[in-house]
Amino acid sequence: MADAKYFKNYINGEWVDSVTGKTFENRNPADNREVLGHFQASNEVDVKRAIDAAREAFKKWRLVPAPKRGEMIYKLAELLIKHKEDFARQMTQEMGKVLKETRGDVQEAIDMSYYMAGEGRRQFGQTTPSELPNKFQMSVRIPLGVCALITPWNFPMAIPSWKMMPALICGNTVVFKPATFTPHSAYNLVKCCEEAGIPKGVVNFVTGSGGTVGMPLMKSDDVKLVTFTGSTEVGRTVSEVCAPAFRHVHLEMGGKNAIMVMDDAIVDLAVEGALWGGFGTTGQRCTATSRVIVHRKIIKEFTEKYVARTRVLKVGNGLDPSVEMGPSVCEDQLKTVMEYVEIGKKEAKLLCGGNRLTAGNYAHGYFHEPTIFGDVDPHMRIAQEEIFGPVVSIIPCDSLEQAVEINNGTIYGLSASVYTQDVNKAFRAMRDSYTGIFYVNAPTIGAEVHLPFGGTNQTGNGHREAGTAALDVFSEWKSIYIEFSGKLQKAQIDDVMP
Image (cartoon, rainbow, N blue to C red; front, side):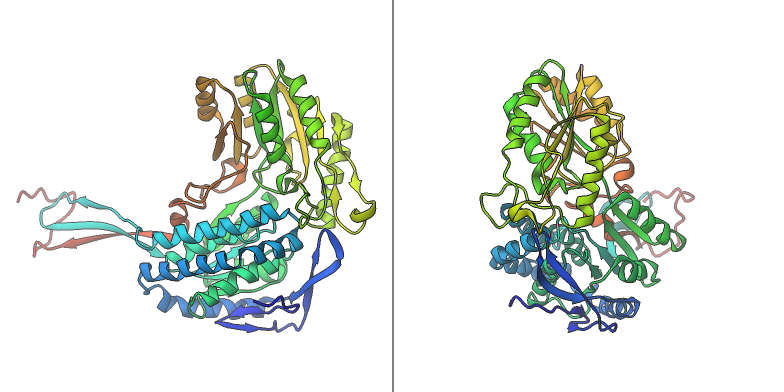
């Protein structure tokens, strides 16, 4: 897999140019002078060609036995392992997070591929006894058809794998539109699909903007499902566009996640968790810890240690193994962070950070200091709105009950955690926190592929990715009744004894 500077769309098993003849640049957020590649600036014509190819391929792909589909996905996982280090380095270059994290991103795609390969032999249905004699009944999964995958830039291989692998194992075909900031990682995943022998037209890859690629995908009558991960604002648009046709929609959107630190917590452990949860991936995770709710009895000790650890975090180019936090993905994202920092300065007390980094090696990148605010009221904007950057608010509380109330007091409900040595408190927090993911004595990040991933409230629309729950997104249930009595029997009307 050569490091080509010019990349094409992948439609019906062929690498092709866009009909527009235009491309866009992929640049390094740690040094925006570095152009990493040129990708196709596609339009609705390219999208239609990809959808047409996927629609035709579906006719045969749905009939390929699921275990055979699984064997191809297993081979894909093996290819990802082979190229893991190269893919991780290329991912760091295009989206900024440190190398150990991009290795984890690729590993998650490997894990999901292995997991879903196994589901080729485990797409269990149900059999139940009939209320009538000489009658058999069961349920089976059936694929939807063409699925549109619209994915974000923060996990540019992991999140596509969460969507693509269950879609394929269920017998669907896909048109994949990656984020414009991270098309190279998406290309690498699709290239592995090709090398794994997945038939032409089953996986199609079209790069370009949301308006010229994403919108035609959402509006096409041939697309049966749109699965989207991104902001709540854009997710609402996806839902509205798909609603008139009753198109299936899966949405994974924002979060305002909190760690609750109780007075009996191991403070040093909680500090490390808040550090990783708040500043891992530069805070650019939907599960990032943007709020830390701390019991007043220990808030002074926690804050002093948290600020001290944060001040010495090394920010820089993620390819440097000594760097602990990379840049924001782009200038606009950095500006959003800076705007919220200014809001925070007016609302609360700035404890550390608060500035864009511009000197020396930072001059051509999108770097910001890891930032902490104290004395934050839970109703302040910095405690309510998703920032998607390295900004954390410390909020005091007097009890577990108050901490849970604060945690639940946002429009989101993705992830939360509690630090406590009291098992009773831990179970009450688990029960009462209205989130899709919950951790005990760990930060709000770190989900694994074999459990459902997703959130409540405006984080999503009720579906889940990963685990067997993902199969419910990418398939329909069909109930089948087989009559072998040789006569007409009327369910709920006939009272027939054998």
